[in-house]
Amino acid sequence: MHPEKYIPGTQFSEIQSLYDFDKSLRSILHNALLEYESNLGAEISYRFSEQHPEEHSYLAMDNYSRNSESVASVVGTISSLSNVIKQKSSKRQDNNAIKHYVNNHGHVPLWVLVNFLTFGDLNYFYHNSKNNLKIIIAKDFSKKYNRSYNTNISVDVDSIEAINHMVNHFRNAVAHGEITYSKSLDRGPSYKSIKRNLGLSNFDVTSQKEVFELILSLKLVLNKKDYLTLKKIYLILLIPLLTNFNRLNSLLF
Image (cartoon, rainbow, N blue to C red):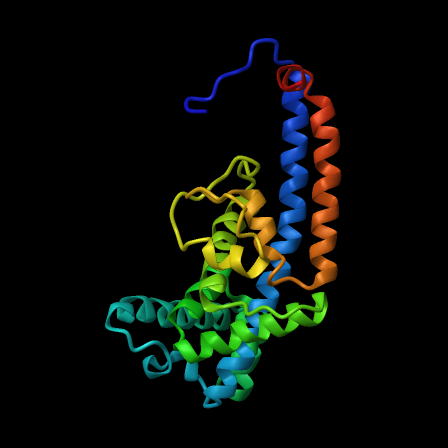
């Protein structure tokens, strides 16, 4: 509702319940998003290094997409990676892994560097990679999903791109304590490929993707145990929320 308005009869306890719900929601999403961030970073570092084992190969433009429309984005990614190395290796009192590798080995392996990147960095790294690398990473997520759920689907590049876009958006909101339960994206990659992968062809998704769509999407890229934990806690959070909204319940029922 824009602008937002109080429903007549709203009680302070209901506002408090919504605040508590959103705080708990951010907590469980934070854990899930960090897990995917770790998974994606591991995939990128392993598969990229497999194709480009040379030292600092991630700083070479030839190892990324050669699409003319991606040149500026590729340069931005390389610049971000270089800046992370520069900042971490120059801190005098910070004995981090990047500084160790620079001082003792003269280079920083990608598997070390990814641990210092933001999800935004990982998102653009994947987006700017060559298409064959993106396909390999998507296939790795497919294999993990199919083993866990005993099925046979193909998580494609479009799905990973769409998930990364959503995760990047919500990751920032969760990390900075923003209101999350009503947050939405009205732009970005299509949700069609995710619906197809999950067998949700009849599931109606408007142009705006919200928390519910995010949680559904994470099923494709999280370990089954982690996803079921996320789903279980999310449902547990919803039940007391509904019972605490007396005014809402009276309007609905």
